[in-house]
Length: 182
Image (cartoon, rainbow, N blue to C red):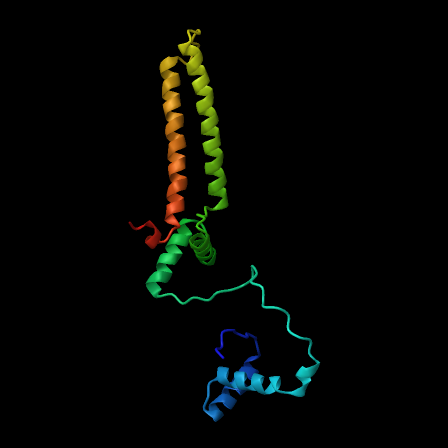
């Protein structure tokens, strides 16, 4: 049977030193000693009174994954997470989620600001189109004039397209290189 789970516990430094001495005496490491002690305990008749185990453990928000990184990768992780204003663990969690679910994360504040800006620019564009349509139908142009309205419309459309581009670039930045390579 393959060992694929961990049991973690904190002990006093005295208990740790005693376990170390016992393991050294037997020529094994501390982990092996603790494993052997657990196996002995689990073979006792006291287990007969235990209720049957529940179904498999559910993975919850508190589930943890431990990863070792090379020094250069750690440096890059710190840089990229800092650039997004996120803790390294949060950045890695979002990156994994993005890869697994194909959903590009964006820090909430940035996402809401960009989304609101796109909505406002779209509304501005509609209003400017209505003004331009009225002017083209022979209505009396009040300031701003036709040229100014056209310029504002171009600015609004440019900004809208720029924000859409930012959202798309963010989405692409979270994808793996394998997904984005031709």
